[in-house]
Length: 221
Image 1 (cartoon, helix red, strand yellow):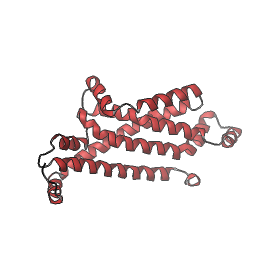
Image 2: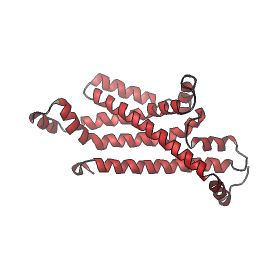
Image 3: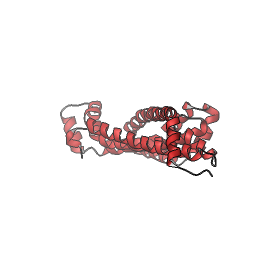
Image 4: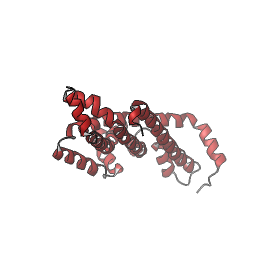
């Protein structure tokens, strides 16, 4: 195997900086799209089942079972139906993102104190207004935690989506692993892996900031 050197890695990065930036951008875009879709679906499901015990248990159990499916296996099953590239990647990422978002939505809404809900109803608010003006704002920090967990999952799984020609940094990781022994094999794998880690940390930091800015000061921990 060709020996690794920091000088060689620096030369590699200089020559492929534009390529790395493009792959990072694609990785971020596919994650953001998937998290946005998963949030719409997951929060909606959480709202629908929060007060229905059987439906709530069914949805949470199904989500928990679904997340145990190996990502490579799911991508392999999706590719004959959805083809290669962005579509199977987004579907898989949404699939894996649902559990933490649905679970935290249910937990956050159900942890709103009963006394607060009774006060809101006593002021003449309709159930819909209670949900959107009282419950969801109070539950937002818990829901955002679920979104953050989902984001970390999708950043990692998006790299594996290179198996079905998915966009992002997984291309470099797979290229490095498939060419072990060649001159730049370790450079490809290391660049892709480190970039994924940095992207995950940056995205988590952004979500923490968004959660803080959108949460009422009285609810901040």
